[in-house]
Image (cartoon, rainbow, N blue to C red; front, side, top):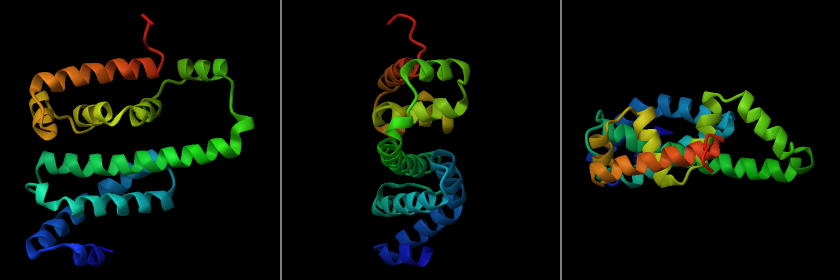
Length: 179
């Protein structure tokens, strides 16, 4: 598959950089995609889609080993996985509509089984602007300055987005006691 991607690269320098990215991050990408999708076929499609997007934006990437490159690659992957997850979820809802639990059962399950997986699912459905900042902060463990640099915004804007993302996440998991 690497040969296919390399055939799409525009220059020798891009080919070398992409090959390094592919070899360095492919395993991590497969693992993360599986955490989100839990379906081997979808995982392969997701990683393929992410690599095509990375290849399309090679000029924007710096050093292969930098946190910014890793963050870009992983956010690209997670966006692809989120899209596939939503599509898969929509298809399941259509098939299983009659078997869906009622609201009180869902609320009870959320209260009793609040897990890291649930939080990850809720983060995945946040708007991109908030999901990306949560991923950069908690998954990639970037500080506010690094997040601001990665997203091309000020540190104050990064902190405010993070605050808003946390508030939205609390609402999604039922933690908003004021509303």
